[in-house]
Length: 306
Image (spheres, rainbow, N blue to C red):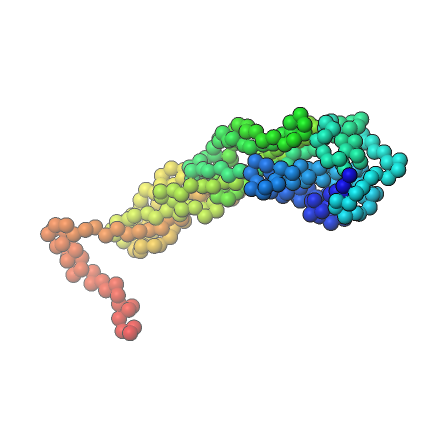
């Protein structure tokens, strides 16, 4: 049989820590997942990665494997004379679920205690409206998973789950849903599902983190006189007192009126002054009267600059 370099399969050094091995496994398992990978040998690579991880994640098996020393991958190999491996963390996997190299060393993980392996984590995107991000929402998701058939070969399947998105979720946020990833081997603990939130564009509000912004149309007299106006927020309409003499693009803050959180976000109101059209002679006369009375020169600062 051929020697397998499990460290090379995982892409880690022989002195790699348990965390390094776990991270490598999660990365490679996602890369070669048969249901999503474009690699032509994804299924075989997926199986190799799982086999390597079963050995290197377990201190007893890793120590036994390390005792064989390092050899080139593919070199003809036979276990040392008298080699015998038995562990209280043996597996319930059927013979044939692993390579000949693995089964000759570890007996297909048959032992006294029943081997368990945690499933790997998975990820998905979830789309929300801004209102759902503010209030929280439930989603029914179809998640793709893989389980071993009676021959130990990975088989994809689809499962429906319901997840709760908490109030205050932000665009790009990752939400962990415990134990909803891939099933574990031998009855082991499932991995986790990580949901990446995507908030759809809103017709009124712009979102940045937990803060939201709103362009608010106001009449010239509302801005000039400092009137109180009604403003939409994610939690309902509120009254806002405009400072006297406000100009277009002035920004006002409504503290705590953004997305919920600790602390909550704010809402920024950007004033946009709307000039009424002079559609009648009376309208024109009123504008001319204002021009005579106020004597405003809005370009005064530009005069003489060139």
